[in-house]
Length: 310
Image (cartoon, rainbow, N blue to C red; front, top):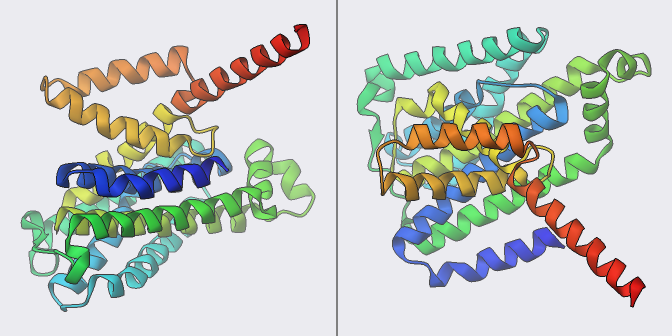
């Protein structure tokens, strides 16, 4: 019900936003989808990946190459972007998941940086640090409001799919593996296959976010593959709260709007962000969504006690 109300609110909000507001809201939804995809690994499977930028960037470049070089319509490139991201995630996941903890994290980071270096230097194919520009979608999608609704539809479908996974036997199996892999495998759950599938699905959704971001910005550059792009998903998840289903999306919106507000006042955004995250980790580990749910529950208990007392 909460998700449905959020969707209706976002759908009704579109016509009242300015051009800048539509772009900012679209970017928040894209980052929210990206952070939710990352949280499939982080919270559900207990895997900390620093390589999500690899799949974000592959999706963006697949879209950009097909639109900018082959002249494809934007919508027709999305299935290819999803497939390319999923394929790269399959390869990276197959090589990485056999490792554990910090070794897994560092190997995913290494693959992302390898792809970043390739995109940065391969001028004939990717344009190098000049990137691929002039990627405005054709037709109505070139306008801010229709594109916002396209992003909203992609966000709803992606989050709906993740919600289905969360409540499915696959989701329960992932959480069982996260909590005690040896015990879960002892009852017949194949840890490697479950983790690999989660890795591929997270990569696929990250690629969708990358393709949408490239179209929103009308350009794709190698920094789509840089480690800081992975850090954005991690920071949004921590800020919003990984333990709440929509927490990463809430954190993504807060992260983006805080960045805009702070950068308008000072150039010390990284310092402000670092102080905020330090405060969240030390005093509010459940994130913004966790704080909100806690307040709602306290209020509900207070109302219930008042009703009983009355």
